[in-house]
Length: 394
Ligand code: NI
Image (cartoon, rainbow, N blue to C red; front, side, top):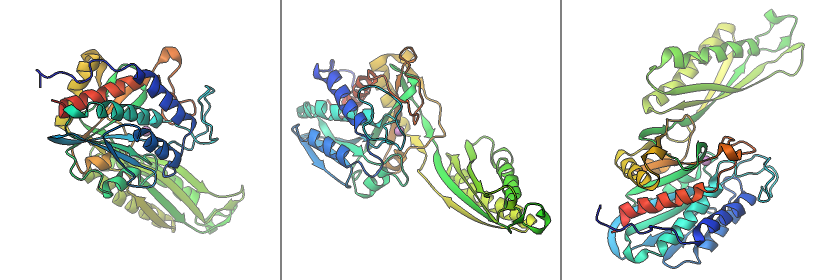
């Protein structure tokens, strides 16, 4: 590979301004998961302006563009997610959300804009493409069961050899690229526990079965799953995030509901936790004469990066920004449905630094003041191009 010419030594002049314009348009017009109708129409319309792309709509709010070279080679999928969040934007810039209560607070506007620019640039170099590129503009990353699994079922990965995706990261300084080998993001699973007791007068607790006292015991016991009951060398989080019961000072309610999340990486750990939660809930409820119903819903698979492809992407990143700015991203207990693609083909997911303390761009993802340093967009495009170059251009 060393003797070949890189296809894009320098980006054409239009790229930097255009990608910002697209990102701002999308930022101003956010749509929630599974409702990305205008977004998908905009993406399709924009893609149709360029030659050589075969465009399809595998689901009502997703778009796939295929670029096929005349020469044989691998099939590589590039993915961007397009959905926004149910958050009311607090930024006051002129391209802030026009939809009250809906906001691009995770950078998916930037992902879509970067992949549009990448598709245009690569379509202009089709004559030297060996193989095929699929540009996947995915709906509904934020809402389980997620858009990725729908697209996999619709066949968008059929015949694909590798999948590559990026995420803008506001807590990583702009200019840096975060690479992770192996386990990167956890599987976010959810549980609901309904405790049924016996309501009564608060002054006569011995005549009632107090679901609040039982639920409080249970919250404490659930913390022991991580500290006492599973392998301390495995990454695991168990969090109770909602506890609902009661309606007044002097009534012991007859039912309580606990909701929470379990985050893990290993399938063995992931399988044993629901059982422990069930046994623990039933045991504690039984001591006090209550009954329980436990519901456990598996979420996205964990994001686990392929070794070979991650090394290739890391090489591309080092060529692009230098080894000092390519950092080893620590694993995160957040979730990402990019994993649905990795269940089918080797893939890797990369963080593109988009934070800038000096500019006040410091808010975390899903915050009402979240934003990105827009110069990160060109870095993302350059990384897509360099990865394409290594895999598909000779
Ligand atoms: Ni996101």
